[in-house]
Amino acid sequence: MKKTKSTLAIGTVLTLLTIVLAACGRTTNPGGSASPTDSPATYPTGADQIVLQMASGGGFVPMQVNLAGYPEWTLYGDGTLIVPGAQIEIYPPPALPAVQVQHVTPEGIEQILAAAAEAGLTDGDAEYTTMLVSDAPTTIFTTTANGETSEIAVYALGFTDEGDALSASEKAARATINAFASKLTDLQSWLPKGSVAEAQIWEPTALRVYVLPPAKASDSALEQPDLKWPLATPMAKFGETSAAMVDYRCGVVEGEELQQMLASAAGANQLTNWVDGKDRANLIFRPQLPNETGCGEG
Image (cartoon, rainbow, N blue to C red; front, side, top):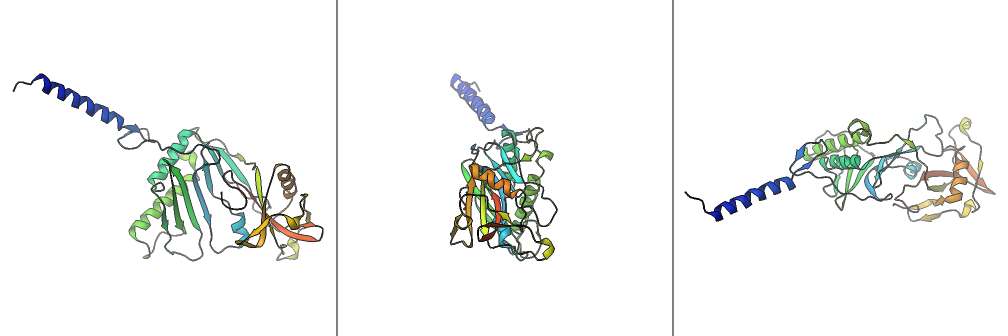
Protein backbone atom coordinates (compact mmCIF):
# COMPACT_ATOMS: atom_id res chain seq x y z
CA MET A 1 0.00 0.00 0.00
CA LYS A 2 1.34 3.43 -0.86
CA LYS A 3 1.98 5.62 2.17
CA THR A 4 0.80 9.18 2.00
CA LYS A 5 2.84 12.14 3.29
CA SER A 6 0.43 12.54 6.21
CA THR A 7 0.89 8.91 7.24
CA LEU A 8 4.66 9.25 7.16
CA ALA A 9 4.50 12.45 9.21
CA ILE A 10 2.33 10.88 11.89
CA GLY A 11 4.66 7.88 12.09
CA THR A 12 7.68 10.13 12.49
CA VAL A 13 6.05 12.13 15.27
CA LEU A 14 5.05 8.99 17.15
CA THR A 15 8.57 7.59 16.90
CA LEU A 16 10.12 10.80 18.19
CA LEU A 17 7.58 10.98 21.01
CA THR A 18 8.41 7.41 22.08
CA ILE A 19 12.12 8.23 22.20
CA VAL A 20 11.57 11.39 24.25
CA LEU A 21 9.29 9.65 26.74
CA ALA A 22 11.76 6.81 27.17
CA ALA A 23 14.59 9.24 27.81
CA CYS A 24 12.55 11.22 30.35
CA GLY A 25 11.63 8.08 32.27
CA ARG A 26 15.17 6.76 32.56
CA THR A 27 17.42 7.92 35.40
CA THR A 28 20.41 6.47 37.16
CA ASN A 29 19.73 4.48 40.30
CA PRO A 30 22.14 4.32 43.28
CA GLY A 31 23.84 1.29 41.77
CA GLY A 32 24.65 3.24 38.64
CA SER A 33 22.40 1.31 36.24
CA ALA A 34 19.46 2.69 34.31
CA SER A 35 16.05 2.34 35.95
CA PRO A 36 12.70 3.27 34.37
CA THR A 37 11.18 4.62 37.59
CA ASP A 38 13.84 5.60 40.13
CA SER A 39 14.99 9.18 40.56
CA PRO A 40 16.88 10.90 43.41
CA ALA A 41 14.61 11.97 46.24
CA THR A 42 14.37 15.59 47.22
CA TYR A 43 15.02 16.41 50.86
CA PRO A 44 15.24 19.44 53.18
CA THR A 45 18.69 21.06 53.20
CA GLY A 46 18.65 23.05 56.43
CA ALA A 47 21.20 22.43 59.18
CA ASP A 48 18.31 21.94 61.65
CA GLN A 49 16.03 19.93 59.36
CA ILE A 50 15.93 16.16 59.83
CA VAL A 51 16.29 14.02 56.73
CA LEU A 52 16.39 10.71 58.59
CA GLN A 53 16.41 9.84 62.26
CA MET A 54 16.40 6.54 64.15
CA ALA A 55 15.51 6.88 67.84
CA SER A 56 14.52 4.34 70.49
CA GLY A 57 12.73 4.96 73.76
CA GLY A 58 10.43 3.51 76.35
CA GLY A 59 10.71 0.06 77.81
CA PHE A 60 11.28 -0.93 81.41
CA VAL A 61 14.25 1.31 82.24
CA PRO A 62 14.93 3.89 84.98
CA MET A 63 13.62 7.40 84.34
CA GLN A 64 17.19 8.71 84.13
CA VAL A 65 17.88 6.49 81.12
CA ASN A 66 15.01 7.96 79.15
CA LEU A 67 15.93 11.52 80.13
CA ALA A 68 19.48 11.10 78.88
CA GLY A 69 18.41 8.97 75.93
CA TYR A 70 19.88 10.00 72.62
CA PRO A 71 18.76 9.12 69.08
CA GLU A 72 20.94 6.40 67.62
CA TRP A 73 21.20 8.20 64.27
CA THR A 74 20.23 11.69 63.08
CA LEU A 75 21.01 13.05 59.60
CA TYR A 76 20.34 16.71 58.78
CA GLY A 77 19.83 18.40 55.44
CA ASP A 78 23.29 19.99 55.36
CA GLY A 79 24.87 16.53 55.67
CA THR A 80 25.53 16.66 59.42
CA LEU A 81 25.24 13.19 60.95
CA ILE A 82 25.10 12.98 64.76
CA VAL A 83 25.36 9.66 66.58
CA PRO A 84 26.33 8.52 70.08
CA GLY A 85 30.06 8.02 70.44
CA ALA A 86 31.90 5.16 72.08
CA GLN A 87 31.01 4.95 75.76
CA ILE A 88 33.79 4.30 78.26
CA GLU A 89 33.38 1.01 80.15
CA ILE A 90 33.42 2.31 83.70
CA TYR A 91 30.97 2.64 86.56
CA PRO A 92 29.70 5.16 87.41
CA PRO A 93 29.67 6.40 83.81
CA PRO A 94 30.79 9.96 83.01
CA ALA A 95 28.15 12.65 83.47
CA LEU A 96 28.60 13.94 79.92
CA PRO A 97 27.68 11.50 77.14
CA ALA A 98 30.04 10.91 74.24
CA VAL A 99 28.57 12.21 70.97
CA GLN A 100 30.22 12.27 67.56
CA VAL A 101 29.56 14.02 64.26
CA GLN A 102 30.30 13.17 60.65
CA HIS A 103 29.50 14.82 57.32
CA VAL A 104 27.66 13.05 54.50
CA THR A 105 27.81 14.30 50.91
CA PRO A 106 24.63 14.99 48.88
CA GLU A 107 25.32 11.83 46.84
CA GLY A 108 25.52 9.87 50.08
CA ILE A 109 22.26 11.35 51.34
CA GLU A 110 20.51 10.40 48.10
CA GLN A 111 21.65 6.81 48.39
CA ILE A 112 20.65 6.63 52.06
CA LEU A 113 17.17 7.84 51.13
CA ALA A 114 17.00 5.33 48.28
CA ALA A 115 17.79 2.56 50.76
CA ALA A 116 15.19 3.97 53.18
CA ALA A 117 12.60 3.89 50.39
CA GLU A 118 13.45 0.26 49.61
CA ALA A 119 12.92 -0.51 53.30
CA GLY A 120 9.45 1.06 53.16
CA LEU A 121 10.33 4.06 55.34
CA THR A 122 9.06 6.73 52.94
CA ASP A 123 5.58 5.36 52.25
CA GLY A 124 3.75 7.17 55.04
CA ASP A 125 3.26 6.47 58.73
CA ALA A 126 3.11 2.86 59.95
CA GLU A 127 3.29 0.92 63.21
CA TYR A 128 4.61 -2.56 63.87
CA THR A 129 3.75 -2.92 67.52
CA THR A 130 2.85 -6.58 67.98
CA MET A 131 3.92 -7.59 71.50
CA LEU A 132 6.80 -10.03 71.02
CA VAL A 133 8.61 -9.53 74.31
CA SER A 134 7.77 -7.50 77.39
CA ASP A 135 9.18 -4.10 78.35
CA ALA A 136 11.20 -3.58 75.15
CA PRO A 137 11.84 -0.15 73.58
CA THR A 138 10.12 1.16 70.46
CA THR A 139 12.31 2.34 67.60
CA ILE A 140 10.97 5.22 65.52
CA PHE A 141 12.26 6.07 62.05
CA THR A 142 11.46 9.60 60.87
CA THR A 143 12.18 10.24 57.19
CA THR A 144 11.54 13.39 55.17
CA ALA A 145 11.74 13.01 51.39
CA ASN A 146 9.89 14.47 48.42
CA GLY A 147 8.05 16.92 50.66
CA GLU A 148 6.55 14.26 52.92
CA THR A 149 7.51 13.07 56.41
CA SER A 150 6.96 9.41 57.30
CA GLU A 151 7.15 8.02 60.82
CA ILE A 152 7.57 4.27 61.26
CA ALA A 153 7.36 2.80 64.77
CA VAL A 154 8.69 -0.70 65.47
CA TYR A 155 8.35 -2.29 68.88
CA ALA A 156 11.21 -4.53 70.01
CA LEU A 157 13.15 -4.09 66.77
CA GLY A 158 15.85 -6.72 66.46
CA PHE A 159 14.79 -8.64 69.59
CA THR A 160 12.96 -11.31 67.62
CA ASP A 161 11.05 -11.43 64.38
CA GLU A 162 9.61 -14.88 64.95
CA GLY A 163 6.46 -16.16 66.55
CA ASP A 164 2.87 -16.94 65.63
CA ALA A 165 1.76 -13.48 66.73
CA LEU A 166 3.37 -11.92 63.66
CA SER A 167 1.64 -11.88 60.32
CA ALA A 168 3.73 -12.72 57.27
CA SER A 169 3.65 -9.09 56.13
CA GLU A 170 4.78 -7.71 59.49
CA LYS A 171 7.51 -10.33 59.76
CA ALA A 172 8.83 -9.33 56.33
CA ALA A 173 8.62 -5.62 57.14
CA ARG A 174 10.48 -6.08 60.42
CA ALA A 175 13.26 -8.06 58.74
CA THR A 176 13.68 -5.41 56.04
CA ILE A 177 13.71 -2.51 58.52
CA ASN A 178 16.13 -4.31 60.83
CA ALA A 179 18.51 -4.89 57.91
CA PHE A 180 18.31 -1.20 57.02
CA ALA A 181 19.02 -0.18 60.62
CA SER A 182 22.16 -2.32 60.54
CA LYS A 183 23.29 -0.59 57.34
CA LEU A 184 23.05 2.80 59.04
CA THR A 185 25.77 1.79 61.49
CA ASP A 186 28.24 0.95 58.71
CA LEU A 187 27.80 3.56 55.97
CA GLN A 188 31.34 3.22 54.63
CA SER A 189 30.68 -0.37 53.60
CA TRP A 190 28.03 0.52 51.01
CA LEU A 191 28.15 4.23 50.19
CA PRO A 192 30.51 5.55 47.50
CA LYS A 193 34.04 6.22 48.71
CA GLY A 194 34.36 9.70 50.17
CA SER A 195 30.63 10.02 50.94
CA VAL A 196 31.18 10.02 54.71
CA ALA A 197 33.86 12.01 56.52
CA GLU A 198 35.78 10.75 59.52
CA ALA A 199 33.99 10.99 62.86
CA GLN A 200 34.86 13.81 65.24
CA ILE A 201 33.74 14.80 68.73
CA TRP A 202 30.57 16.86 68.47
CA GLU A 203 30.44 20.16 70.34
CA PRO A 204 26.83 21.13 71.07
CA THR A 205 25.61 24.71 71.21
CA ALA A 206 23.08 23.97 73.96
CA LEU A 207 22.75 21.51 76.82
CA ARG A 208 19.66 20.24 78.58
CA VAL A 209 20.20 19.98 82.32
CA TYR A 210 17.79 17.92 84.43
CA VAL A 211 17.73 18.57 88.19
CA LEU A 212 16.76 15.49 90.21
CA PRO A 213 16.84 14.48 93.88
CA PRO A 214 20.34 13.59 95.13
CA ALA A 215 21.75 10.30 93.89
CA LYS A 216 22.42 7.54 96.41
CA ALA A 217 25.24 5.10 95.79
CA SER A 218 24.39 1.44 96.37
CA ASP A 219 27.85 0.91 97.84
CA SER A 220 29.77 3.31 100.08
CA ALA A 221 32.82 2.69 97.89
CA LEU A 222 30.95 4.34 95.00
CA GLU A 223 30.11 7.54 96.84
CA GLN A 224 31.32 10.62 94.97
CA PRO A 225 32.50 14.01 96.21
CA ASP A 226 29.98 16.81 95.66
CA LEU A 227 30.62 19.49 93.04
CA LYS A 228 29.67 23.15 93.24
CA TRP A 229 26.85 24.43 91.06
CA PRO A 230 28.62 26.68 88.51
CA LEU A 231 25.88 29.04 87.29
CA ALA A 232 24.79 32.43 88.61
CA THR A 233 21.14 31.32 88.61
CA PRO A 234 20.55 29.45 91.91
CA MET A 235 20.15 25.73 91.39
CA ALA A 236 16.85 25.79 93.28
CA LYS A 237 15.43 28.22 90.69
CA PHE A 238 16.98 26.66 87.61
CA GLY A 239 14.68 25.08 85.04
CA GLU A 240 10.98 24.36 85.16
CA THR A 241 8.64 21.49 85.91
CA SER A 242 5.75 20.41 83.73
CA ALA A 243 2.88 17.94 83.77
CA ALA A 244 5.30 15.32 82.45
CA MET A 245 8.10 16.37 84.82
CA VAL A 246 6.70 16.39 88.33
CA ASP A 247 9.73 14.83 90.02
CA TYR A 248 12.43 16.93 88.38
CA ARG A 249 13.12 20.19 86.62
CA CYS A 250 14.72 20.89 83.28
CA GLY A 251 16.47 23.92 81.83
CA VAL A 252 18.70 24.67 78.84
CA VAL A 253 22.10 26.33 79.08
CA GLU A 254 23.95 27.88 76.15
CA GLY A 255 26.54 30.54 75.38
CA GLU A 256 28.91 31.42 78.21
CA GLU A 257 26.89 29.40 80.74
CA LEU A 258 27.27 26.35 78.52
CA GLN A 259 31.04 26.58 78.69
CA GLN A 260 30.92 26.95 82.48
CA MET A 261 28.65 23.93 82.85
CA LEU A 262 30.67 21.76 80.46
CA ALA A 263 33.89 22.59 82.28
CA SER A 264 32.39 21.62 85.64
CA ALA A 265 30.64 18.50 84.35
CA ALA A 266 33.81 17.21 82.70
CA GLY A 267 34.97 15.97 86.11
CA ALA A 268 31.60 14.51 87.16
CA ASN A 269 29.92 11.15 86.76
CA GLN A 270 26.31 10.01 86.98
CA LEU A 271 26.45 9.56 90.78
CA THR A 272 27.90 13.01 91.40
CA ASN A 273 25.71 15.36 93.42
CA TRP A 274 25.85 19.10 93.04
CA VAL A 275 25.51 21.66 95.84
CA ASP A 276 24.45 25.29 95.90
CA GLY A 277 24.20 26.64 99.42
CA LYS A 278 21.86 24.30 101.28
CA ASP A 279 20.52 22.75 98.10
CA ARG A 280 21.84 19.43 96.83
CA ALA A 281 20.80 17.60 93.66
CA ASN A 282 21.84 15.12 91.01
CA LEU A 283 22.12 16.41 87.44
CA ILE A 284 21.60 14.71 84.11
CA PHE A 285 23.17 16.29 81.05
CA ARG A 286 21.83 15.83 77.55
CA PRO A 287 23.39 17.74 74.58
CA GLN A 288 20.65 19.35 72.53
CA LEU A 289 20.32 18.42 68.86
CA PRO A 290 20.13 21.17 66.20
CA ASN A 291 16.39 20.66 65.66
CA GLU A 292 15.51 20.68 69.35
CA THR A 293 14.31 23.61 71.43
CA GLY A 294 13.79 23.89 75.16
CA CYS A 295 13.26 20.70 77.13
CA GLY A 296 10.55 19.37 74.85
CA GLU A 297 10.85 17.69 71.49
CA GLY A 298 12.32 19.54 68.52
